[in-house]
Length: 513
Ligand code: KIV
Ligand code: ZN
Image (cartoon, rainbow, N blue to C red; front, top):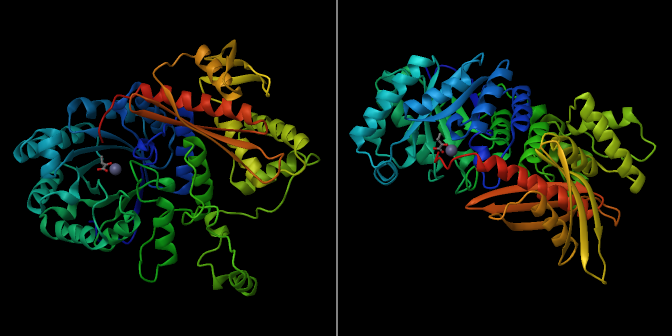
């Protein structure tokens, strides 16, 4: 079955493996927004989360399952009845549900992590996949740490999973250890030697520890894999996962040597990338392929000259083909709603009416304070204003007294679950005073500030400040961002955003996946 078509199924795990990135967590509304964009992008399968991890994860998987119209929605589950039943309870309302169950098959993981013999692992596969198939028709099975598994044992494990009803077999490079040659060879070998391999679609899942995630994915496709698992912007555990946008564009641009198709609507890529970056607070590095700010920038004179003569001299794809529009129209205080809406559209934002009204109000305030409002300003303010709308804790008002004649003081009003409260504090500097006020209103004694970073969104002394904050608590980290033309307001917003994310993370038990 797996090698009969050249159509590659795109399995997006931004909401599950992507969310396992250090510091990253999304609330339910953010996940729904990302899921909607993933459907617009044309992914075939959305891994919505790990339903057993926490009540919040369960609710998110359930909400995504109920929302998706076209994509298959799946939840991860360990090889246990409790996990599988919880996954199914979250998925049962989906139009197209899938249970994704996994167990480790490498000698190291079986011995050290699971404390199981190979025979016990085979038995666990038999039980878990059979149970998953009893509740759901579409079951995917993954051999965690497949790249470090014994080939003979891996083949037996795959055969067992297929016998018990799994119709997708995923062979993850869990620790990013494979190379294109070895990862491709593993697929070729397994597809050739597992007797019932023709009953399943083989799937790739590559981590990027050696920077080879996308190369390994493509090698596996050439060896017969027909599903690829990946994340937007390549976010994920440690060095991340293979990036959806890179795989999709490699297949599109190099169709001459990679003759495979996907359902990805490439013009939706930038919109998806921006959204994921905004909701997770994980910035995209400027030189990141396809979606980085410099991906289509030309600095040297020779390149610029070539571009003016014929853009194909230095561009193998157009910015428009990945959804990057014209970005040079600058707005000012006389720009109206239509111009603002047009700009949002160009930048890849689709806002509900109330979100548009909030964003427009913020834009007008900014335009009053700043002569020219650039694209970067709008991205920062929309991400800050609109995406924070569902946070449990919100910044209502900030007043700070600072200067050389201390003590510096802050008066802060927060809304916590809809109830407003105000605190006045002193500190060793205005930021310290402000953050102390947040601690006073929402105590979180075990958390410490691991990062506080300020950057300017654009050039000029009237530029908006973009602040990043990382909070760390008992091994968990949460990242928050905030933007405002007042650096201290941006600081409060960033801290509170990180705190909201930390609260989501607290609800999640430490499950390994
Ligand atoms: O990397 C991995 O092995 C995984 C599996 C749980 C699919 O994410
Ligand atoms: Zn993974």
